[in-house]
Image 1 (tube, one colour):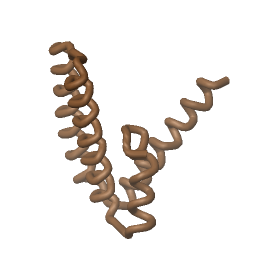
Image 2: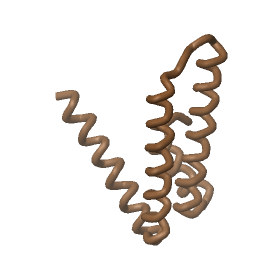
Image 3: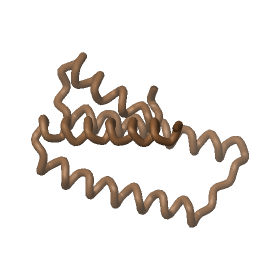
Image 4: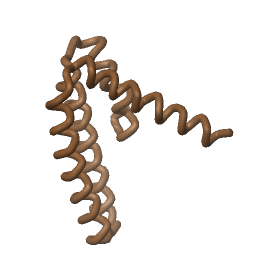
Length: 102
């Protein structure tokens, strides 16, 4: 529910049930994903796992690039338009998953 895929459930739930603004719901979901990810990586390292520094650096770089792009795009979109983009992304993922199963 609170991992990367959980955003597809959490964001609509925050908007519908708490009356939260779409921009705040997305930001809240991303914060939860960040915290869950950090705890997972921390536990993995604490358990003796090792991470490739190159792969880690690429994920961090991609995260910052995506964060900046997403922030700039969301500032230009109104709440209802952001909801449409979010719904379109959910539909696209659903279609992808369904076609992969066939």
